[in-house]
Length: 202
Image (cartoon, rainbow, N blue to C red):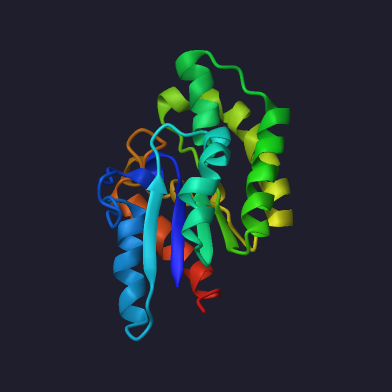
């Protein structure tokens, strides 16, 4: 079974672009190390196609080459945080209509190609410099939830999960900057995502 992981820097996590088998050092690698021992007699291939800085429109633009052409059985997507970050970092105003249209087209395109689509919700933790981003991010999350709950085979709600654990444990245990996960944060993503993936192992 072939599974492609598709997203931004949280998926990318330092993967070697010249090495097709490179999984990076984040949740994809942790998930691989956990999944394969569970199914020792099963041929499971994990491919990391995360690209740091990507927004939803970027995934849509490279969906054919980086996912569909690889003919995977499933695709795991985490995307959306950069659509918020880029407003505050570069002054790029979010276009929520386009965001919804691009996300819908992306998922429908992947579904039409015959693969299982598993969506991992992006998250934002309460780092002081990220608090001002919450309102915009919540607007995105509303769209993501509406579109993905309707179209995807699996949806994992990470924003509520991460902010929930951060009420009793310092958020920096999971992400120093509120966006990029620590090793502990990546483990939480992997441990939760693997449950959704195992439902669809052939």
